Length: 108
Image 1 (cartoon, rainbow, N blue to C red):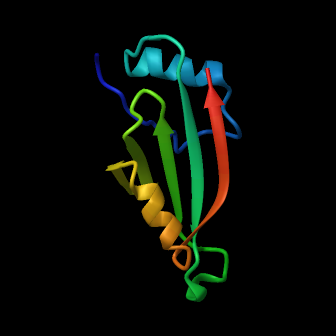
Image 2 (image 1 turned 90 degrees about the vertical axis):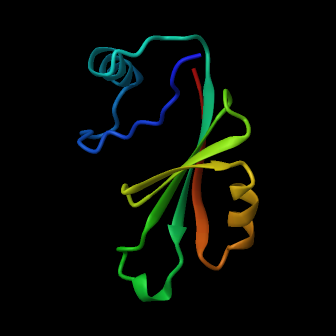
């Protein structure tokens, strides 16, 4: 089956195009196209009242259709975690800590 991973380009200038992402994955990481896929990307914001200056933390969550029982989360670009799908229910109950700001479905 191979390896599935989530990649974040820190040095992206503006909004990268899909073809530039494909080029980077195939050339730099020796990846290959394995068929159609889709995912959902969600962005959560920390609701800590001390952080009202616009420097709050962000959590990024990615759910891949190929792995329906798992989600991948990253907090402030430093911690990447693979968790069970149950994490979405936990975040729903922790509304006083994390608020969902955006949700984007991606199909290719």
